Amino acid sequence: MHYKSILAEGFEVHDLLSRCLKQNVTLKNIRVPDNCEFTADVKGKDWQRFLQITGNRYRVIVTKEKGFKPLITHILSRRMTLVGSLIFLTVVLLQTSFISEIRVFGYEKLTEREILKQLQEAGLYVGCSRSVDIDRVEIKMYRDFEEISWIGIELKGGLAEVTIAERPEPVVTVKNDEPCNVVAIKEGYIEKVIAREGKTSVNKDDFVHVGDVVISGILEIEDKTYSRGKGGPLFRYVHAEGEVYAKTVYRFICYQESNALEKKKTGKTVPGIRVSVGNSTFNTAAMIVPYEISVYEEKKILDLLWPLPVEFAVNRVSELTLCRTKRNQEEIEKEANRQARDLIKRHLPESAQILNKGLKFLPGENIIKVTILIEALEQIGQKKSFISPGACSEKIIAGYYCLAPE
Image (cartoon, rainbow, N blue to C red; front, side):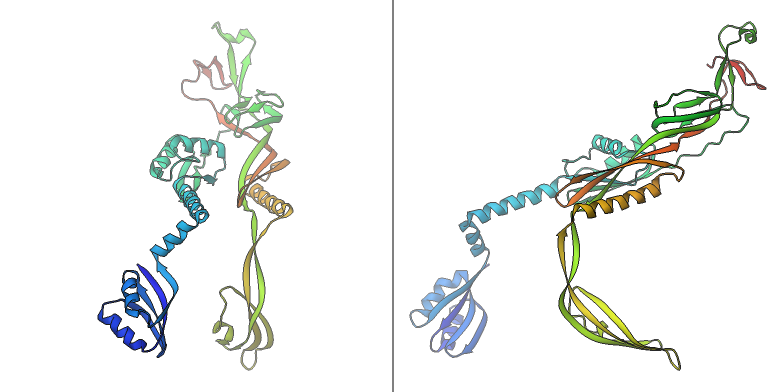
């Protein structure tokens, strides 16, 4: 629709309005303050007929134009505005059509790199379309990672938030009279091995993966007199025991905002009172809150318990404004260290000794990505049985003797 807001001045304006009505000239929002002028909105298609009716008897002033036609004309007349609008629409379209960032939450044993790599193979990666089949991605993640018991993917504009829950590993106990190895339950660099029973399989500074044998419970017997005439080496199985200390590395990702939201008082306040008698309360601040953002402050003047509980207080509601301020590096590092302490408390065992801690900041437009690296010294050994039916061709139960394992 296209309308022109006009001011018409002249004598006998009521006669002019009557003639417009007879000739079907559409007028809206008519205001007649006196007999010599009136204001109204004239439909664009009736504008020429309206001018013919007014002729030279009335002075007509166009005060404003409304509708799509004047808006488009105004935009086309300003090329920079048009170009800026197109760029803005393009940016909005790109941000809402493609994934620009992926954040992963909830992982402990898995690494963010492993998860992001598998998400990319499943079809979710930075730069992919937002129309990606989320159900298909989740199903593939379940198939590829047995450690995942639950995964949820939520799209927020160009941001994809991936939350996972890892499956707890079943605890397998080893009997004290059962042969076993001591294996690594975490990746790390070996610092020290104390083997109380069994043979050490690794050296200092060796890197071990999860499941690697660090103290072996299979000991070779070099005396051939015990071979009983059978060829091949003879082994003795023992219940391996000991402590394995290794340097482990934890990598965490957290995020911080570049700007801080501050609340400032504008100086405008509304004073009030609060009177409480027993369970009844009268508070003027609850009745009058003229500000969208405000803070409530109160000072108690009277507090009696006998003969009735009576309280009297004066209060005030102060208006607040919200503003964003750039956070300095010191504030960001302080908050990052607090996040690091919280992550250490939640994810590292209490017996672990922190050797080193490093923070890496990757600033973005509004979000700062913080990578936290923790180096810790901890005990990573765990007993694991290796005896199963058919594990060796011959076995003497009393001493766990057998030939070379099959």
